[in-house]
Image 1 (cartoon, one colour):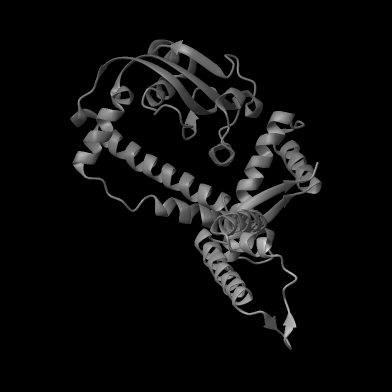
Image 2: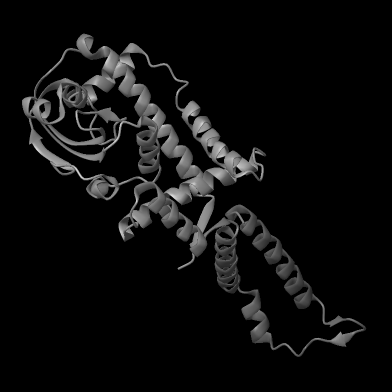
Length: 314
């Protein structure tokens, strides 16, 4: 219930009370001439005092507001994460990775399930749903597509690109060393890597937990202050050239190294001098569009999330 509606009702109640008190004060007899002199004169004066009316309205406003707050919470639609949901997540994870999920992995699996349940709920609200499990997955993908499209319709001007370049100049500079986390997959199946990328983005995976979803890699899942030559020697020339162009603080698309596929998260860069805008204009454009799209998706998901509350059965 909105505040202006509450105030409106309070004013109506106040007007009715005032009319009643005025009538009570002006007439000595009501209802078949029965006397109403039982009210003490001093009590009448208290009821007619404006200060008393102010206190009364304040108390009423407090209770109306308290009730409206409870109504707002209860009006949110509930999405339940049941114990059977979590059991299914564990089973699917074991089938995919041939190992039991740790508590950290389960937490991210649940976050990803929350994400999917919200999108599925919205898809059903848009009448896109059927009772087919394959269609359910397609509906979630459809919501992904709709959210992606919302952030890709704006074509930037050169001034906007130049401003973006200046604000992110470190990203377009000569690299001396890099620090990054990565998830290694001992496979050449790009589809499997893309599914994992979608999962870690949806569940907002912390780079510190990257090792939980990685196959064993000889150099571990983190590099600190590694230069281009060491990158080239350890991972291969193609991988090194791609990694030095990656944007910071976001998970990369699957990258091939000489050992397999990696999902890379750049944590920090040490740079020397920036490239000119003309040299990197294509990269700036791609990064700008990608950032717009990501921000649009985050805002869309945040808006959707605000309409739901989750109940997780332990």
